[in-house]
Length: 322
Image 1: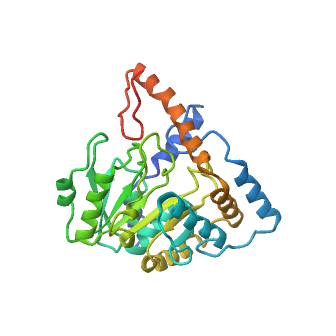
Image 2: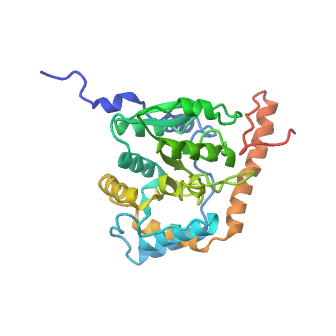
Image 3: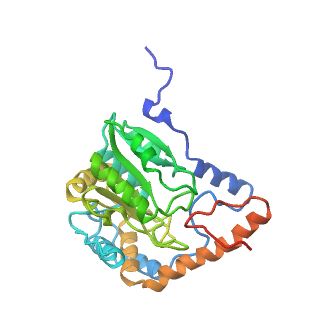
């Protein structure tokens, strides 16, 4: 008997990326593209020089599957420097082909068919398909941009099948930065229901006010948080595809197996470029990065207000009226 639909059923629960579609439309009409998260300015010279030096030094073959040792050391050092979080680069860090692959590998390593994964909406579009590819069910929790997290609604979403929660802070697409009180609510939920938290922190250094608090730094969360981030936004190299995962050792072993069979490893010479940036760029770089985006924000928000389209004012995008 011939099948009328030759595609796998798992692919039918989601559509093509809206982000990529909007980029094609913007290119077609020569429009300003605000749909896809990549900058219109070059990366720092240190990244270019280190990557080119690696290529000239014939760093052309596979790096260690879960990341070049130099990069994993630099990642671990950055967590100690930024957040006071001690990370074992040998047992807890996995370098991936971007944060997108990182989240997919992490979920596939922990989530089983039939599990439920809590996802706040609005959300970055990959989280739903990632859960579906695991055979799990995403459970959407509506969180209006200017509303605080409601513990009762969050609690009501948990069922015996709930296995994990996905948290994106600073958030894509809203810019929301979850407060310490909100994170403590999430941590309490995870501890009481034995949930794993998958945190997407790719925008951790692009804040206009306040501070980013990794969920893993809260009491009891170090052993139940899988942190996903990468170099794309911080170093303006979205095309390099270098991301990473920080996870407890008992989860890292499974994550590395899935990562290996999905992509083998991130580009070896580009890993050297990212390592050099993490090692050498000081606090002024990160301050200037946020300031540059703040300047652009301060141009766009009054223009939207004047056009009668005032944006919502989240923690990450609040601005005084013009």
